[in-house]
Amino acid sequence: MFLSREEERILERGDGYSKCMEILVALGEIFGAEKLIPIKHAHVSGISYQNIGEEGLEWLKGLKVKFSVKTTLNPAGMDLEKWREMGLCEGFVGRQREVLKVFKDMGAELTLTCTPYYVYRPRVGDHLAWAESSAVVYANSVLGAMTNRESGISALASAVVGKTPYYGLHVKENRAPNVLIEVKCDCDVALLGRYVGEVVDGIPIFRFKRRLRESELKALGASLASTGNVAMFHVVDQTPEWKDFDIPRERIVVDGLRDLDLECEPDLIALGCPHLSREEVLNLYEVVKNYDGRVKREFWVFTSRKVYDETIDVIRFLEGKGIKVFRDTCMVVSPATEKFECVMTNSGKALTYLPKLRRVKAVYGDLSRCVSIAFK
Ligand code: F3S
Image (cartoon, rainbow, N blue to C red; front, side, top):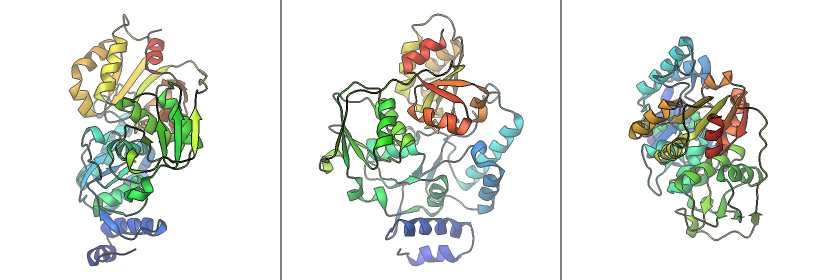
């Protein structure tokens, strides 16, 4: 891979900056990148102390670097203020605060959300280095920005160097769809995404019978990325780049999806994977206001600080119903969900990761089902 003199100098310094450059060069060489290109924004995952542990924290501390571009962070292991309501202990909270301090000292903004696009909206054609598969697929597909599916470490290296290797989805030709998904049913997009993620390799282009709402595009992408390696999709007549390519010949018709069985009795209802948007918080309010009294089971909702502040009146109403609304964290990266037996969620992504990472059973319910079960 071609490196400028300046890039070579960084590589030879023998410090934390060199380590970051080594990571990018290794990645670029594996994938045949010709050079590094500048990025506008890095989004780093692997923030929860539950996931990185003491070893990860020590590695971060040892780097002694500063970020050179705007850098946002994925959710941490707890709500920074309401962690007691989540049932977390002071020991864990202290270690998590230490992780956040290291990132803050490096120059990150403590956004602690997997929806950085509600905080800073990238433009069409912006090059990014984002970790967090649900944000990556959203940026590429819905916003027309360009990012590969980075790991927490490669996104961090890019945040430091301000560059990323030029390969994969940074190259326009590689963004062409390879399979058309004809959706003939009015299927739940979270379940559709899980199915297509399992059977498709590459970039699907969907043809729906109607225009999808923004929240549906988000849910579709998160699900696609959770069961497969999908980092981008197109939607005919809707997403920004679908017209730039030919419609592929290979075609899959979806005219119905098998219902997922309710395999356990939920003791937690959890929404907000990915973090709820303003529109989704308002939708939740519209459903909840039809029920009298308070919820009869634990009901947790996750969103970003920005959306929380923008919808504070609605959130107060939800809290009055017994629903707990958390920021800075999520149902998958926080150890708080481990104390439950069975979580009901409307997220295709959480269905995959709750059993894997938190070792709890997870069952699917759409928004109205989640709310009706909560009041039962
Ligand atoms: Fe976000 Fe956590 Fe889901 S980071 S996409 S809420 S697993």
